[in-house]
Image (cartoon, rainbow, N blue to C red; front, side):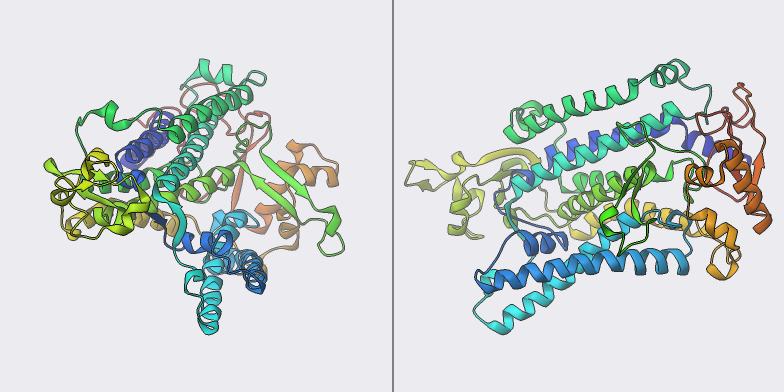
Length: 513
């Protein structure tokens, strides 16, 4: 247990979390620069997501079929939202699996988003079946091909991963500078961060300025990685596959390093990035006749952060898949001397070539009649290499990602689930159910109590319902580096401690050996 405590201390230390969060940004830029697909002029394709994009955005047949297609994807979105909320979130994750991170309405928006993608994918195949029955509708069949070039799609993906990774890293930084789990760490920085609106001003200033620079560089090719790198440590398909795999590992590590992983039931309120509030609530007054007053859009800082990570995870999974199954010919590319990759930059001419003509031997000896130059002189040279490694060797890159996913699922299953006595309508006291439906601020308004009294009242009620669930410690103000300070910046609140195993750190200093 001593080794476990020391490991958790260093694994969840602010420096460890910051290094992982910002290392992901660097690795995503590196793989975008080294990936030969980012220069490909062929049509982009992406499993499942490509079908959804093609279903909603393009390949409209015209006439009455346009109306049919719009109705189908609207039905898919509505069905996905309802299935995600009431089946996947409430029944599967909440009642059947009893996952703590999906208690009440937590994580419902992310669940509904992914279920909507699933239903768009299913409805696209139903729509394809109607087109096949109609006949002569082959060009309008919805496939994984998205109707945009790989070069454009990879630029969009690079900007998207930058936004997601930066917001994630910045939010991790925000948590480190607001919280007191490690009171001896960054005292001066935390003092500055909490003064006035420093964190809000810095967030938007850094986000807008850096994003403008990143978008400018990526969209205009102002900086060429191959000209800048000049072949220093060129990558091949195996190294790129392992790099993509470790990016997936880092994405999961960001979540696993959270002090409240895997239950996310602590009393730490994480402010939304660039905002002075921990949550955003949007009520729907127009729909009062349909919905009850308590139904509203509610986004917390914690799920806003980790929801973005899982969105970025989709793009990272696609990047990993591309590196594992990459073949130059399928992307309008070929291999030249030194196993270097060449890219055909004229997308209109790709249909004129086949496997025998899209080679170095043919393109270096044949002339383009329009330019009177060899074809290879018109192609883009890349320092990235393709050595033709067997698929089974490249699949070894799946091992780190698989291990991370298995470890993630193991901790969630072992430590992130309610016991039978803790969850379920049949075992819940009516008072406990009433408290669960309201936040502490709403509860205090209804009861006419202060926030401090609310915490104590709620905790005592929960203790009577299940004595093993919670324990309330008196507020303490120990400023030493050994004691654990309250998670909330408001030190007058008593701390609520969950009496079950978790991966959170319990002190400012590592346990003594």
